[in-house]
Image (cartoon, rainbow, N blue to C red; front, side):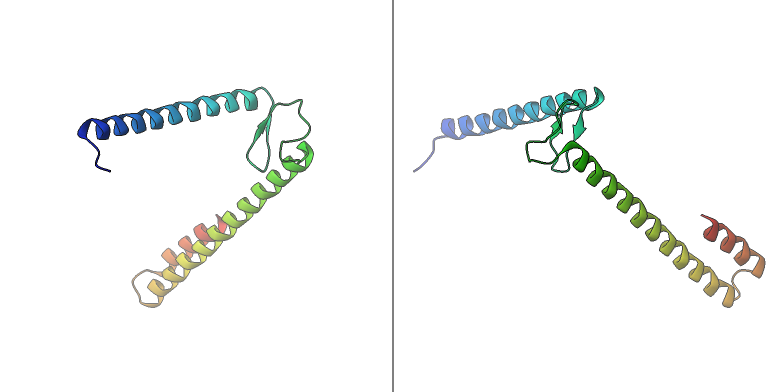
Length: 120
C-alpha cells in the first residue's frame, strides 16, 4: 500500500505525540515514586516502589527480605569497588617501580608514591 504524504505526516505526528505522552507518563510515575520514597516508602529488589505501610510487594517479596537483599547488594558493590581500587593502585605502583628501575624517578619519589598508593 502506498502512503500519501498526508498519511506519512499524520503517522509521524502521532508517533511523536505518543513518544511525548510516554515520556510525560514516565516522568509523572518517577515523581510519584520519589514522593512515596521520601515519605518512608521502600523500593523492592524487583524495582517496584511501595508505601511504608505495605509489608509485601506485588512480586510477593516481603519488605524485610527485599530491604535485606538490597543492602547486601550495596555491600557487595562497595566491596567490589574497593577491590578494583586496590588492584588499580597496585598496577600504578608497578608502573612506578618500573620507572624507578629505569632510573626515571628517584628512590625518594618512588617511596612517596608507594606510601600514597598503599594508604588510600
